[in-house]
Amino acid sequence: MLFIFSFLLVPFTHAVISGDLNCTSYNGTAFVYTPAAVACSNAISDASCAVLYPAPNTDYPAAGNDAERAYACYTTATATPAAVVQDIKTAALANCAKTCGLCCQTDDYSCPNVAYPRLNCATITTSQCNSVAWRTIIATDCPSACGFCNQGGCVDAVTNCANDLSICNTVGMQDFVNTYCQKTCGRCPSTTASSSGSTASSGTCTSYAADSSSSCAAWAANGFCTNTFYTAAQRKARCATTCKLC
Image (cartoon, rainbow, N blue to C red; front, side):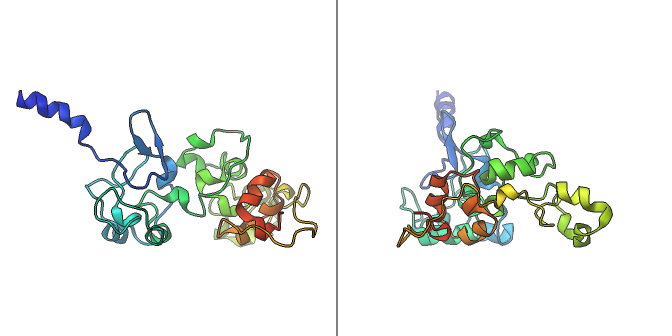
């Protein structure tokens, strides 16, 4: 009887994410981490992050699991329930977002995708993020899936163009760089920086809502303010002041 009783308890003894449920989704039985929760790299070494943010049990966040998030990632408490302390969470995001399972809330991964993407942004894999065939499409339609939020809709199709910048001006390499090294060689399509469709203020506003992202300056430099892949509402919600959107 004791064995049966213990067996029945097993399904209920596994860890739960608890406290802060950002970067998770409900799979029908439990909250689990999304792929975007661990898609980034830690800003400092993984070993250092493990020391700073020890797991409450032996498991750390991974796509599809429900490992309990380290308390130090979001609170000063040592047990749950615990309130989120924003300063603590901000420090975790800046240094150890992957260890904390919070990649989806970093600036590189926190931006709106287009309203009608050509692919399902929620199912994009790491291999697609690194694929020559997929990268440019993802950067345009689903930038938050691969950490392309600061790229203004334009990335290199191959990841090592910057290893040799001379190819940008080499006569025999122009077809290649125009297709595969658009970001590095400054060959981004005009649609990513076009002024057409802009909803920028014509001077009738005297003030603007505060930017909700710290990356607006970088996004604006890459054409975000006038990129019609994003709706006017999306641009205003993120960067109203930088883009001067009423």
